[in-house]
Length: 461
Image (tube, rainbow, N blue to C red; front, side, top):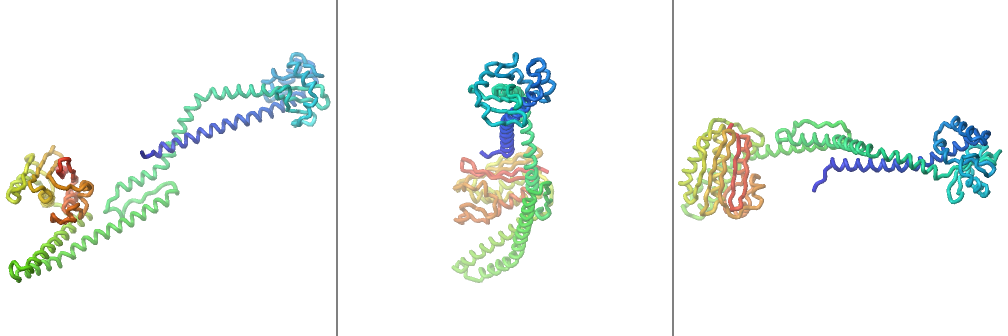
C-alpha cells in the first residue's frame, strides 16, 4: 500500500513536537532543580546576614525574612528551616535534634564552600544520611541556618504536579496545533506539485509548444520547473517532427506507388495468363496495393494528430445504415450469421463519410477475425442524448494484451506474425480517432465466452 505524504508529514511533525515537549520538560525539571538550589542558597545567605542580629527573637526573625526577601522561595520553605544557636534550636524554628547532630559533626564544615558572600560559609553536605544546605556567619559561627534538600525536592514535586495537572488541557491544543502545522506545511509542499499536475493534465500534442509556464513562489522548485519546460520543448519538437514525417512520407509515397501499381498491372496483361511470372506479378500488385492503403491511412492519422480533419456535419440515420449493412452482409458473407438489435430512427449529427468508414472498419474486423461458423451481433440503442453501438463477434486465440493495445498503431497481435489475416493494423486506430473527433469513445472488451465486443459511445449532437 502506498504511503500518504500528508499523513507522513503530520506524523513527523507530531513526533517532533512530542520530542521537543518531552525534552523541554526534562530540561526544565533539571534546570529548575539547579535554579531552586541557587535561589535557596541566596535566600539563606541573605537571611543570615540581614536577620542574624534578631535571631534570638522568633517574631522579629519572621518579620525580617518577610521584609528582606524578594524571592518567595525561602518563605515557602520557612517551615522546613532550622535556626541553631550554640547547638540548640531557637524557639520553634526547627528540630533541635538537627542542631545537636550538626554540633556533633564538626567535619561537616570541611566540605567545599559554595557561598557567594565572603562573610558567609555555605556548605552542601550529607548529615545523618540526608543532604543538607547549611550556612553560618564566619564572624558568628555559633548561628547556623540549615535546610534539608528533601524539603526542596518536595516543593519542586508540588510545582511539577500543578504543571502536570494542566496537561489534559494543553495536550489537545498541542495536537491541534501540530495538525494545523502539518496541513500548512503539506499545502506549501504539495501546491507546486498540484500546479504541475494540473498543467500536465491539460497537455495535448497540439499545445506542447505553447503551454502556459508554471511559476512557484519557492526558488527550491525552480530547477524542477526548468526541467519540466525543457521536457515540454523536446516533446513538442518530437511530436511536430513525427507528424510532419508521417504526413510527408504518406504524400511522397502516393505518387510512386500509384505509378508502380500501374506498371505492374500493365505487365500482368503482357505476360501469359496463368504463368508463374503472372502469379508473381499479381503478388507484387497486392503488396503495392497494401502499401497504398497504409499510406492513405497514415495520411488520415497524421491529419487527426494535427487536428486538420475537416468535418462535414449532417443528420445521419444510423439505424437505416446498419439495417442496410446487415442486409448486404447476407450477400457478401453468407457463412456468417448476423443478429441485430437496432433501435429505429436513431439520427446522429455527424460526418457521414467518416462514420461509414468507422463502421465498415469495425464490421470488416468482425468478419476477418471471426470463427468459420461464427456470427456477428449489432446492438444500437439511444436515450435521446447519447448513443451506444456495440459489435460483438466470436474469435479464436484472443491475445491477452488485446484490450490494452487494440488501438495502438500497427498492432495486430499474433496475426501480425502469421499473416493469416490481411490488414495493416491501422483500422482500429483510425476508428478511435474518428470517435474522438465526434466527442465519443471507442472501447474493446474480450468476454469470458471467447468473443470480442467493440463499443462506440458518443453524443447524438
